[in-house]
Image (cartoon, rainbow, N blue to C red; front, top):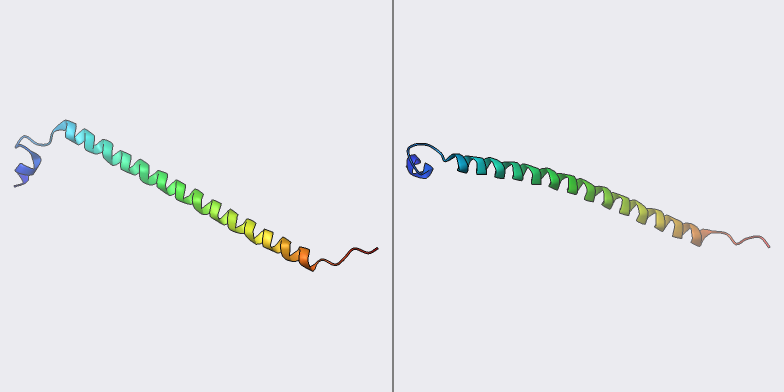
Length: 70
């Protein structure tokens, strides 16, 4: 059964092994890129959240401001 899965008794085809290595490297590259993009997305979301909080604080301060002396 194992011999049938390999294709023949002589062992694996070197081209198949090279393609498998290339695909494994591609998967690793894509996983690292995904991690980088997720970290960037999290940083942008945190910055946007911070900006929303600061804007809401500014609008509260504007409503509570006292009138200028005349």
